[in-house]
Amino acid sequence: MKRFSLYFVLTILTGILAACGGNDSQESSGGLNSTDVKDLVHQYSTGELQAENASITSEYLIVTEEDGSDKTYLLPEDEFFVSIAPFENNTHPCTNHNLTSCQGELVNEEFEVSITDSTGETIINETMTTPKNGFIDLWLPRNGDYTVVIKKDGKVAESKLSTYKEDGTCVTTMQLL
Image 1 (spheres, rainbow, N blue to C red):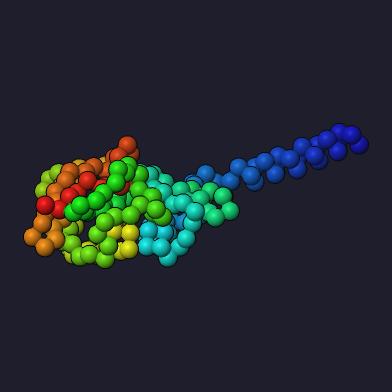
Image 2: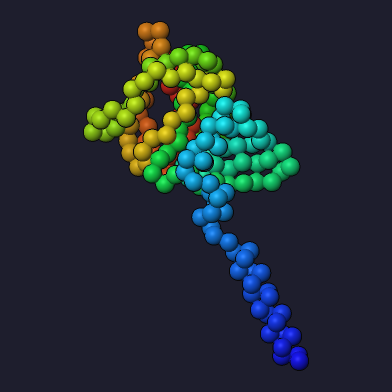
């Protein structure tokens, strides 16, 4: 009887531990696919969703809820998020973008944005408007080197950026001159 009880308890514990292990890729992405995670990033960036904190690294969206709980979402493996705050007078230092607290100077402004890769191929060439946080959010191909040109009212800002694992997601150094 003792052997049966011990075997039963061990079988139950093994099942519980296996269930708690879960699927790492599902847990790290919160069970969301790439499109859903990108939509979640957009919602935090525009203020549609609120959280105590939502920051984004080259690999993860990390959300701290009002109750202090953390959720981590894996970003798409073939796309890199970067947020650019063009400015004229005021900026702040930033490496990894905070979707809930980073504030750019130029809010609800329209810009001509052009991005080319290292071979000269145009990746983006369009007019974009900054939302209330003053940032232009972009999804670029990972593991690349790019030239970014932003224009507004005859002023231009140009910068190089790259989208490798060690790169930051926040660009606050593009002053319009």
